[in-house]
Image (cartoon, rainbow, N blue to C red):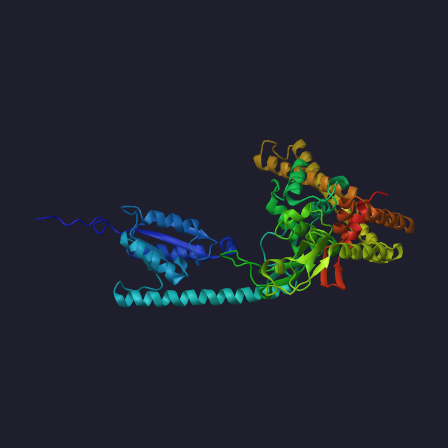
Length: 529
């Protein structure tokens, strides 16, 4: 007679305990893990099931399977033969809060002879028990989504009121206690002198470069910071992504965006789902806008590479007022005439855009005349720049305060180091203690960073903008006018692109010229005196 092989049923039943809480804060301070362990152990003992292994998940949600202890448990349960026959959980929601995922793993485990048992929601193995478990899982999933919705609503309101919801703050900021509401401490962001100067340095490099060498791109800034030994907050090296993040976040102008991305997919959310959280501004709005414009101009998706060295005076900045697309060079009469023509209309015809063509020499002359006689008029220049330059005093005052904070931090850290050195000399502390050695190294690193930031802050205080005088403005105006009249078209093209972002052709008789005061001030600052 053939013998029936039952590799799992003959083995004595043993159990694995799975214990989970949702957040790291619960794991540190909550009693849930010890209570789950006590109840699961008592249940296993009552069933005379020895505990084969224990899997603890401190601070991971059950809405997905990205849980180290969970994956380790599943891997063990799917070995042949499995080291345990049941997985004990306090409730099914401890295992999964997604009904589809729960059933997916439950069926994989069942094929290997492993069952999932909830000590508070016991169901049978018959179809009725299966249906009951699925109903419980559906309710758990619904409840999880409802809790997430209410939690997110509370966090969004918290952000609207200017309070920090947690996580690591952006570089240049630190989290501080703001107020006490009952048993809950509300926290806010404040500027951290160490790190703030690194952020300001990035913006200066993006606009002016190192020692006035000219604007630098993201990759060049990352290379410069690494070459200068200016590390990230954790002491690591800067990458292009981290530099780009700093240069594009509205947090640094006082508007931190909360709820920007979906947690699971990291896809950006719609603007109406985001919340603007007010924080102390690190960067002036004009400087921020100028950096965004400079980065946009370098973006090949915004200005095609062919426009960068184009001989056409307004190439890359002249656009059709009807469709917003670029106006490009077209010729007529065998090349005798040159026109700016709408690229959409040229490709698709009148159905694509009803835009017009404008003689190139007339449009170029109109733009130059406007810039030379209106923008570069000394009186108008002075008026335009006054609103920006008036802030110079405030900038310097703020930077002097920040410099004082940095120097105070250096003094405080030195005092801590001296106390540690004194305790070693007096025999109170053991110099071979690894934790003491590590603490001294941390303090030295903190002191060195603060000293470096203080030196850079001091060097930058008087390099924000030039001291404007009527004579200096007049000199700049005359020099710029001479560039416009120069035979060197590259000079004229560079000057136009430095002070003009966009020339929009509305009709043959109407054009709009858009520019930035910050760009104008940057051009003014870098011009030879």
